Length: 290
Image 1 (spheres, rainbow, N blue to C red):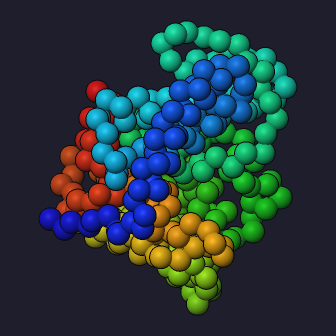
Image 2: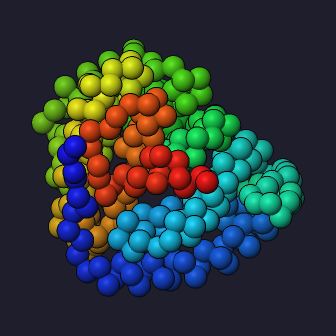
């Protein structure tokens, strides 16, 4: 069993301050989410960040389940309602019942893969499909650019199709790999390179082996994907001068995509050959849903 630990995090006290502040802020956002459409997104964003920081802060599982449930419920409703701009629709995010809300027009980028990963970890196929079927603009895609052949477009279209009908599109995968080959010199872990493509391509390769039911290959590829995640997010460099270094960004503390892959493999009955701080075990085995 290989163990991949969390990278060294600069200024953990700052993380703790942000964690405490966000925790207090979230409760207000939950109440406002029943009055203003945009707050459905804010609850999702804040909840997911709290879960990411929890890798360091380690709160009780019950607390993380609370954040996880609200975050997923809110982003699922946000994606469902986004089809009806300027309409008054009914929504529900908890057991308190249904409420009416006016759907605001939005151009919000929601990090669709994280939302899909949360729905996967929740083992909620209905929410997976709702998020996958959300409008293209939430995916930062435009109809006229769907055939441009770049990695990001191929990747997102492949994920949209996979979560809509559980079909892994080999043609889109091959197009994505052609892009990687043609742009190899520009793709890498360094912040000056296309680092997102660098580690998400490893995730995509692991997903392909999962879809092909190749357990041995999947385990090898999952390890590569986690290591690529670690390589990127362990950097003591910031994207912008004076900005937060990647190693301190809570986005890097938890690999939602790799955790979702591990959860799907776990549900197949496969034996995982890697443990990692980036992939919480209680998410992989579904304990967070109990």
